[in-house]
Each structure stands twice: as C-alpha cells, then as structure tokens.
Length: 433
Image: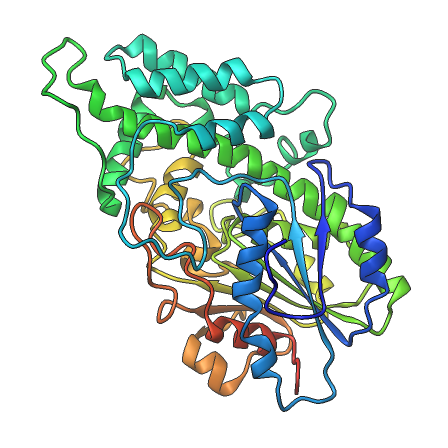
C-alpha cells in the first residue's frame, strides 16, 4: 500500500457481490476512535490508485482538527471492483499536459475490462481490434455495439440483477446507450466530445468512401464502450452499497455503538455510499453525515415525487432520514462528464439527441445538486464554510469555486482533493464542534 498521509487508516474491500473482507472488518471494529470518515472511490482500476486518492483527500484533516483535542478521527478507504479507462483523469494527479483523446483502446484498459468482465476476453479483443482498424461500415458499428453491450449484461444468477429492472424512473432505465442504434449513438457521443473541447485524433487522410467519413465517428464508439461499462459499474456500485457497506455499518453500530460514521463518496462511489442507506438495518443511527462529491447518479434520487412522474419516487426516497445528520451534495458546473456526457448516455432510447443535454430528467447530482426535495437549501461553498451546514436533511453546495480544474472530456469531475472539501465533510459531521 502507498504511504498514507493519516493515521489510523483502515481499508475495507468488497467483491462485486458486496461480500466484505472479514479480517479487515474485524480490525475496523477494534479501532479506538470517536469518529470514522469512510470514503468510497469512483472509477479506479487498482487498490493502489484508490489509496493514493485517499491519502491526498485525507491529508488536510489532521491540521483542520489540530485544536479539537476531544476528537479521535479514524479514516477508512472503501475499495470495490470498479475500473478506470486510462485516458480518464485520476483525482489530484496532474499531468503536465492534457493528452489527446484517442479512439483506440490501450492495453491497460483492455486488461482492466478483461479482469472485470470474466469470460469476455475474446469480446474485449474484438472491440479493441475494431477501434484500432476503424472500418468505415455501418455493419462494423453494429457489431461493435452488440459486443459492447454484452459487457453490460446482468450476470446470470448474480446479485446485481436486483439493481436493473426494479429501479424507479429516476434511474433512467432503460438507457439509450444500451438500446439505441449504435451508429446514431456514436455520432451523438462524437458531437458531445466536441462540445467538451476534447482533442481527438484525426484520420491519417481524408476519407472518400461510401461510409461518409465514418472514421471520425469511432471516437464516439469508444465513448459508447465507456458508457456501457459505466452502466455495469453503476449497477455494481448499488450492489456493493446496499448488500455490502450497509450491513457492515449495521454491524459497526452494534460492536462500536459510540463511534460516529461519516460517509463520503466520489462519482460512482457517491452512489455506493448512498445505496448503503438502503442496506442499513432499521434502528442503526451511527451514520452522522453523508457527503457526495460530484455524484454520478440521478439528482432526483432522494425525491419522493418526480417532476415528470409525480406518483413515482427516486431510488433513495426517504433514505436521507436514515442519516442522523445532513446529506450534502457537492456539485460543479465545470464537471463536463456529468453536464454533457452523462445526460446523453442516461436519456431513454428514442429521446431527441438535441434534447438530452437540456432535459433535466437525465441530469446528475454532481451537475446541479439534489433536486425535487422540498426545503433543500442551496449554498455556495463560502456560505457553507462560513455559516455552517444544516444539521439534518438534504443540502446542495456549489463547489465550482474550487472544483474547476481538468481537461476534456471529463472537465473538473475528478478535481476533488481540496482542503475546502475536507472542511465541508467536517462541517457536515459536526466533527470538532
């Protein structure tokens, strides 16, 4: 494990079905602390990369609590089987220059796909071959779409099946990315990448084939693959949260009833810690705050009534009441991954291509905060840090003043390692007050 910036630090590892590493669970129960900050990563393709994120995010906490002698703060990194395409930025890792977004699939990403989707080695190899050759035919795009969607299929007999068909409408099922015509979706993604300012590779020479210059659309094909993979990881995040982390928190409430738990999640990790509330046993009141950093799930998740479906609630309707404190969603307009790509991928099959980005049904929480929950305050970051955060209920905090760095196509989606955000976590949990 890379050197950690804080002590005591523990890791809790879950598999795809939410089963926890029992040894790690037992060591966590023995930790002598008053408060635990538990952070779940988004897309990271190795535990070592996740540990580097945790070290960077946790680093400001000891200094911020220097004058709080009564607080014994412990730190937990939640590690779950997700993945990251190697052209995606890693939180707080600053490359010297923004690398071009290429259509081809590099070896590291191929290996990650093969590891996370066992039994699909030949599928991944063929996807990589098509991205490398970029044939100018509609048949090639149709084959690519068929293969990409195989990776997002629910494993037969697996626990993830419950996170597909039974989700409310705010979960955008079925999404266009899994059902729309492949070539049409690739064209939409290509336009979306252009909108984010992504620098993409150009064909070696102009194309005059009957395909109409389809080589330029293959950058959109890679994005379709990323989003179908994202859909599978989204399902997995819900599984690990509800069936893994939630019960673990219940066990901790019994073994360490005085320990105050503060959940933090980034991107899909925000979905994971939120779905942990669905798995939290009745009567467990040890979760004292929930802080969501650039949450990559529906901004209607906590709503009891959806604007477009008044008789339907969000997937986490009433779950905010299981937090003995506030649910804080941090959002930024500089996050183009959630402001441009996410709504396009999440819109329903058959929706207008031009309306996807403007249709609020498909917006993510990290784009504009928690929506359709009455009496949810909307604070600037300065207001939250100066005046404090309400002691209960849902709260949206605009963190665009610090969550602003990052190149295309994701923008500031991963720009989360800031002392100001550490202060938000402390304020939400009343840690040191």
